[in-house]
Image 1 (cartoon, helix red, strand yellow):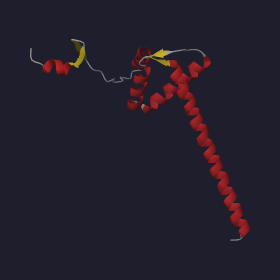
Image 2: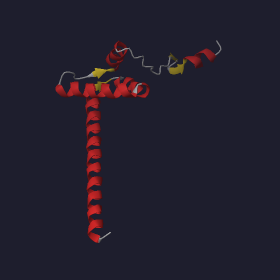
Image 3: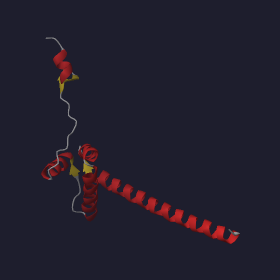
Image 4: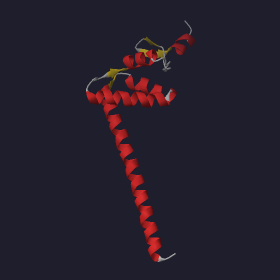
Length: 121
C-alpha cells in the first residue's frame, strides 16, 4: 500500500470514529435531559415506584419515561407523586412490587415487627 492510500484509510477511519462519538454524546445528553425533567416532575415516592418499575419491567419503564417527559415538556403535567404513578401502573395491568416494612414506635424508638415479636412480654 502506498502512503496516500494509508492516509486516506486513516482519515476515513477517524471520520467514522468521530461520527460514532458524536452520536453517543448526543444520546447521553438526551438521556441527561430526560433525567432532569423527571427530577422536576417526580415528587414524594415517585422515584421509588419508578425505580421498582425499571427493575421489574425495563422495557415498559423506558416507554413510560419517554411519555412522562413528553407530557411534562408540553406542560400537560407538572408533578407526579408515587401514588399516582403506582395507580397508573396498576391500571395498565402491571403489578409492581415495592419493598414494604412494618415498624412499631415504642418508647420513642422504631422497631421492626419481627423485633417486636421476638421480645418477651
